Image (cartoon, rainbow, N blue to C red; front, side, top):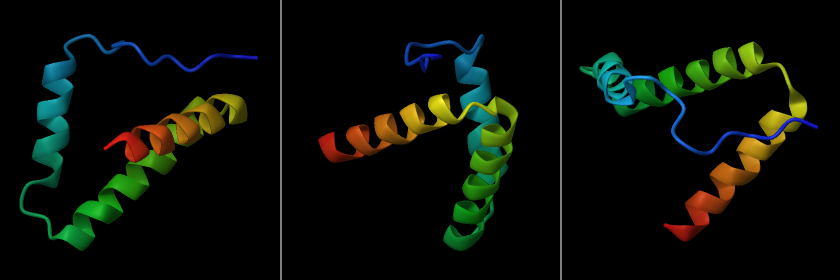
Length: 67
């Protein structure tokens, strides 16, 4: 079984974060939500490992409960 990586793992993570924010610039809330949904589906397809995807869902749910 593969394990989800939860520690920083993106080189130049701040640069990617800036690109992510820029992708949402000028979008309505609905358009932004749709972009996020498409991005999630594209990246989920790329990952392609249901165990990792389930771990990611659990991690996201847990993080949301702590907020």
